[in-house]
Length: 174
Length: 250
Image 1 (tube, rainbow over the protein chains, first blue to last red):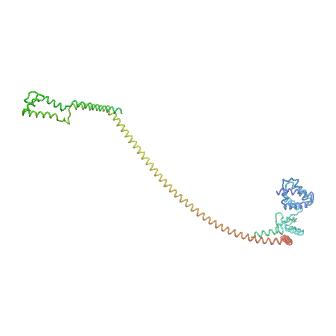
Image 2 (cartoon, one colour):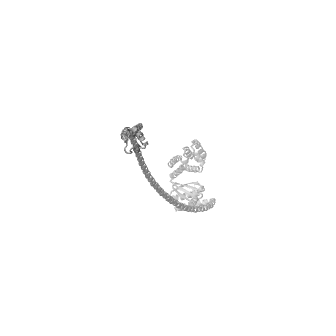
Image 3 (cartoon, rainbow over the protein chains, first blue to last red):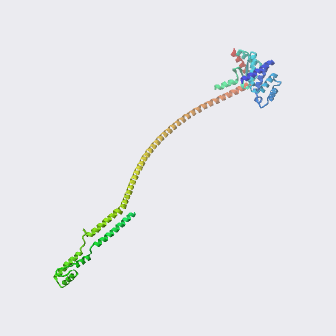
């Protein structure tokens, strides 16, 4: 499944490079994947093979039209028509990492209970870059389950400074 | 059976014939007296027979003493006719006829009577012998049956004793097993009860600890949750995180 997602991400990156907007497409694709994670109804609808592919593509175009680039809309529409909407999160993650590698950077998935300010995002990226020894781009996901603080995931490394994690540690000590 | 009847008839006829022959040869008292009167001769009296007797009677009536003596002597002779025959030695003719009849009878008996009687006796002897043999055989069989019965009875007694012993041993074994099992069950129940009590105790302690920790954590989460509603607190937490990540590098 990971191999299939990587292949789809390569295709998306190739199209975006050709269009010269890989940075934008990967970012939009990441946001679309996050939105899909947050809506069970939308995810089930787009993965329902009983619904004709043209109808599912129409839904995607209706949702993204005017809010995302044409390349991103076309790529998401193609993925949904291929029946791989459930792999969209993995494809987006691979595309983001491909874009970062193109620019000599790593990607950190940052989850926070509230949105980070630009200043916070820049300082966090700088701190993570300093901590890992190479430049890091951050992708912020607002996740209320974090409760407070930040959880940053860079590849296989997780730096958890969330309130949820501290409460869990406290519960384990009991 | 027919031979037997024939032999009996021959015997009866022979007896009848022999009896007639004996009577014909015998002498009666009357004939004896008649012969004495017919041949009578007296001394001093002429003639003989009845004439002489009449003359003697006439003289006796005339008181002739001599005649009286002769009459007394003649009466003695007549009384001799009244004497019984010899009981030991019969008349010769009687002996002859009797012997002849006896021989004939004996011959007839040998010829007709003895064979069937002999056969009857042999048959009777054979029947008795058969009966004796049969009785002996039955007695032998009875003895054998009795011996078998006694042997079977002895075997049955032995078998019964063995069964009783086995039953007794099995009962003892079963009783011992049941007792051991009951003791083991009781020990196991005691151990289980003790373990249950210990487990319940531990569970109660754990539940209490969990309850206490849940209460404490719930209170902490409530306090933290209220404080996290403050945007400044969220900002502070993020800034602290950034500072800590940066400090790790430094």
